[in-house]
Amino acid sequence: MPVLLIAYDLADEAANARAVTDTIVRSGIRWARPLASVWYVETDRRAEDIEAEISDLLGIDDGLLVQATIGEAAATNAMLRWTRSPRAEETEEGNAGAQILRWPFRSPKIAEAA
Image (cartoon, rainbow, N blue to C red):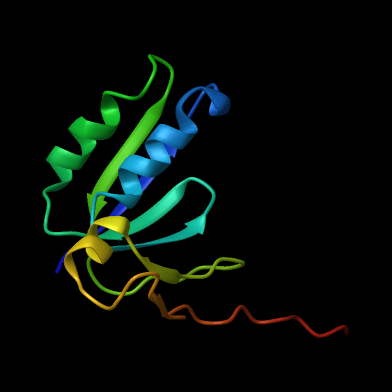
């Protein structure tokens, strides 16, 4: 199943942050949030459909990116903790609250003192 990267900037974080978060979480089977405004969502939905749904919640000065991912990623000071969305829990018996943990990122190198 495809994984989409969803990233956003909200000019007024307090205005619609909860609605945006709820919409992202319900967009797929499972999700991960490696950074505050960056999400990975495993979904059978099209990026355009999710973008349209989230866009309805955004103000004129807010930004949104929804993009399909391919291959590996590298990150520093971020982690992926995959969590099943409420949508998946409703359709999969016996998995209520199940979490999938995955750490696909390489560790950053720590420079030694000279």
